[in-house]
Amino acid sequence: MSGLASNLYIGLVHHPVYDKRREVVATAITNFDIHDIARCARTFGAGGFFIITPLESQIQLADRILRHWEEGVGSTYNPTRKESLSLVRVSRSIDEADREISELWQTKAKRIATGASSHPKSIDFGFLKKLLKEENTPFLILFGTGWGLTQEVKDSSDYVLAPIAGKGYNHLPVRSAVAIILDRLLGDRTS
Amino acid sequence: MSGLASNLYIGLVHHPVYDKRREVVATAITNFDIHDIARCARTFGAGGFFIITPLESQIQLADRILRHWEEGVGSTYNPTRKESLSLVRVSRSIDEADREISELWQTKAKRIATGASSHPKSIDFGFLKKLLKEENTPFLILFGTGWGLTQEVKDSSDYVLAPIAGKGYNHLPVRSAVAIILDRLLGDRTS
View 1 (cartoon, each protein chain N blue to C red):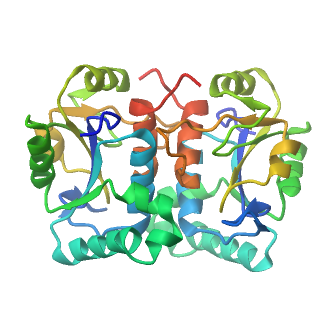
View 2 (spheres, each protein chain N blue to C red; view 1 turned 60 degrees about the horizontal axis):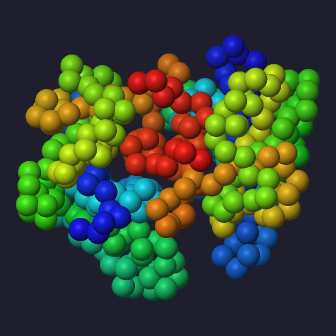
């Protein structure tokens, strides 16, 4: 564990999430999600970034993308992309990502769910920022693709983060939500 | 001008920007940029979002994307996308976008350049936030695609915004930079 890296880990969840009709599905991996979130994770010093999908074809796709930029022709074409992607791992489930982090830290990770609506156990950004600084445990913050994390994932998390308050419109792409939330939690706001 | 809309307008510049070799080029439009930035603009109540490109083929591409989601089958498939895209305009140059805003407000717009490095006339986020609130004039904040806005665009702007400080890595995608900067300038940080 690098002294610079934060105890905050990102999980991009492709299952279980809702689709448009609120049915539980596994979504497809989006190339832009991987690169944008990896660059944000690297910028703000997140501990790591887990792409979470149970689908074998999607796991292979993610591996292929990562290998292209880390070892293939992409690694010399775009070295800043290689640098950010070194933070990325692929996991088959939220539990698998959680186990990997917990083993690394030798202590149970705490889970934070995010979403566009509030939840009975919502905590605000200031509270979470304080928790991250004070507690010497890893945190796994979960972002849902598609139409968001299932109720069950929210209910079973240790915390649910308050939504980003928009002006009467709460339909941010997951990529933008991750950027904003990492900046609020880890960004240097003195400048 | 809606009472809710901010006096801050976004310009996504495809020319003049640098490429990898620091040559001045016109970059291609990226579909994800349009949707992500439009949704961020709508979330934080920006006055509008200008896609700036001098290339006729790119202007037609942008128009086609906008029409698909605003009038075509996309408008019923995904109405929140339609709502965000109503903020989007296409302009042939920074000057053309500037003129459109200045005419609407009947007063000269002020230009703010952004980028990953600091500039002799850099201002910080707190200062710009205060300016936006106090001055009853429109502001056009410019984001460079490719390898960023040219030196000339920065030098000729009224202000240059301080870069987003990363932990030794300053290679955010333009989509992520817009999300973070809009949140810092217009977001509701009380929650």
